[in-house]
Length: 483
Image 1 (cartoon, rainbow, N blue to C red):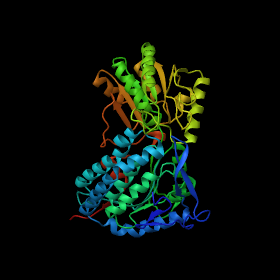
Image 2 (cartoon, rainbow, N blue to C red):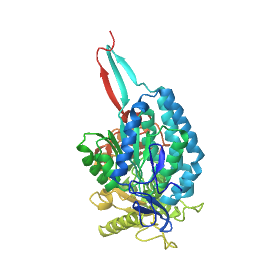
Image 3 (spheres, one colour):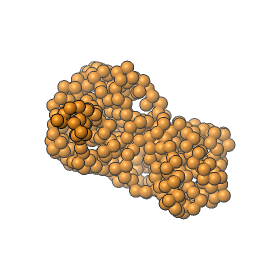
């Protein structure tokens, strides 16, 4: 990782504004911690507002030329980037497993695969996207918004980087990326792919750093036309406030507390099993995880036993082990938060079905969390209200279908909902009443073309395919264009 102490600005790997890192001199650094061992295995330089200034200046200088490129030129560029990313695929998957604790199988089959999937889908989108439309005598044009600041999280790192970079390239925007400082190394590998692909200098820039310093500098910067942010609702509010003075567009994909309604005609065994696995996949560190499972009161006991058996089959262990299903959570801070919320669930009277506080048996080092299931959870309990971001499931019994829908929607979040039913027609009717950006019926296959984003405090704007591309475009109406 030869570029970990540098930033990628204006087409080159450069030292931080504070100078090269040499001993105790130069820029501030941060250790990257392996969550499986709690030991540092790499070090990155931490940027400042001066580094952001340099990156934004490069992006602004590059914007006029890149904005005027043709569709065909951008397609050729993106196809080259796809090949350069594929050439680093295994390296990206390996570093994701190391820096965020994802099991090797998950890192290779899902985490790294998201980069390929989103870039491929955006190439397909750009091939047929209509940037102009004549309505009567008025020309409707869709033009690149300008310089985009991108702030991405640690839980699905390459997924969120590609969800922003790919549509920005397709639109003709230039950009400054601040990846999570907790899992930053995959972004450095991605920047190397960008460089090899021949992306013009200044179009893509990378500055590592933390949210209060680099993230805020990006959000406040008058030279940034749009901020695309993925992270917690708390941090998203801070980004929006920092961006307000310059009235820039703020695109946010934030937290969630997604409900999974299992109707009384569903295949209970399948619905509960897949619901538990969906909640706990990636060690529960997914913003759209189905963490609130609503089950008919008459079936609550059966559902609890299915959930118990499923959770207890999920092997927690070293990311390198072939049979590991759940690796560690990403950091000490995340581990401590999850432990506090598990303890709160017990204190507030939820029934602890399996799991609980502390590490799984046999693991005395690493940020490992026991897969935990609570039953007889009520809506007022903290574990039913707060986003835990760990392998913790709350099972809530309900009476009528109408009650389940009302309670499922009774949350400040609105990222995703899940509905399980033996009747597709019935599931569709429930789905239509859910106040969330996505609804998943009967645990379908993932769709890279479905719009992704939330209602309420889960954010605004959408990602994926043409919905994501639209976010990076301004709309211009030229009246009197045609005779």
